Length: 287
Length: 287
Image 1 (cartoon, each protein chain N blue to C red):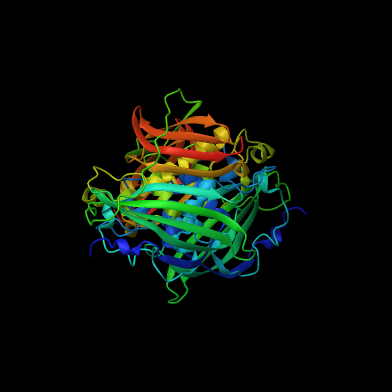
Image 2: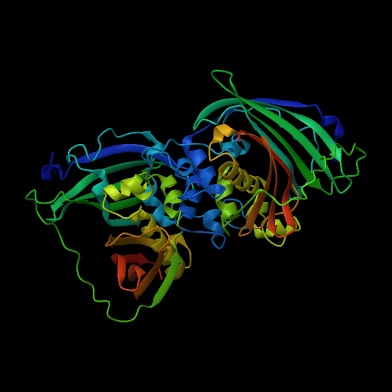
């Protein structure tokens, strides 16, 4: 069955899920945090309160922490496709408050668009999560998935990202090196797609070897933004949107360049000079 | 209250606990396994069945996976002491079968000895775990904890390890490098003692910086033994006993030397030439 553009507008959920302090610690290590970031990687360091990386929101609803499934898969109405051909297109998060170290929450979502890019199909989602007890908004996720080879079904091309002129030198440049086994740690936060771990599966998907999760690079990038622009304080990190433009390989060094304009910053991430892996980045923050 | 030698013989448990496939994967990464060991670090690699490192037995009964606590802490009758002064003395494991990737099990234990070494006290335990449904034996753990500064209570010195003559060159030497953040990953398998993560706590314990968990070094060592002597097959790995002789710092390279004698191997682990961190090692295996 090819992609069905009529699925746009479908709603899914509500799904009830939770996370624990341990999930946040594991995620922190999955996006490369270490001994210099004990507020994010430990829960019992004297004089330090545990904090949660804002990008944890992206993995909050991991399959193994769902208490009550909403029952309607977002993919049920979209059609079938080869999961080895699926890559992350765009990702956005809005934090309505700093994420607590543990939570019970309810998530609802909808398919906001299905687009035909010719070389592939794009499926755009939005999810909103609220605290189960209080109903307090926690975060909103925006994401689009790109399914290579599934274009040409005659759908709309969808919106193009506005071009941003970044021709001055960046205000900040920060590099973090991913580890050869980064995907093996990161995947324990929920996304077990073997594209990121199994060499033979990665070959089926057209890659020489397993690629890093797009959301792992997104997490490394958000970590750089948080420490560089928000003084490491999640309360100053409000929203982050970006587009995935090229795969990252485990072991790559990710260099994040930032251009600040008041309470917004544009950013992009490269795996080598000129090899942009995350672009069109916009952070909204409290300077 | 000082150490009470009368606590020897106390029994504890039964405690009911479980582990999942994810716990085994997280442990594997905690002891340094990576992309060359996908049988241990992934559960969905094509043509590869997930396997569990035998040394996972040491962390099987992590506090956050206990379903029904036996109610009697082994420490309740031992006396009180400063946990910053506690280090691992000896560790032994016997595998009655290869560990399954998930299990519900019952553990019972007893204090097998309380010894006065002058500079500190030694508390020796033994734990036996059986599968909850079948009653099938899974593993037996032997361990002793050394509490610095708590000796001199007038107790027995306890047995000394038999001296083994290892004056020939080792048959195998394998080195693995631990990571600066190794303890931060390893601790998510259950032992959250801040001696391994919090610099100020480590200083209280007399260390310049946080030290690696003894059981993490034990896991690295067991991993080297498994791959070198058992062809990576947990069914050929029967028991492993060793003594912790010196702290390991995260980032150290651990070099494991092995002397094979039939179906036994003696081993020791160094962090630098002559700086033995694990000694008196004995592995029982199927060659």
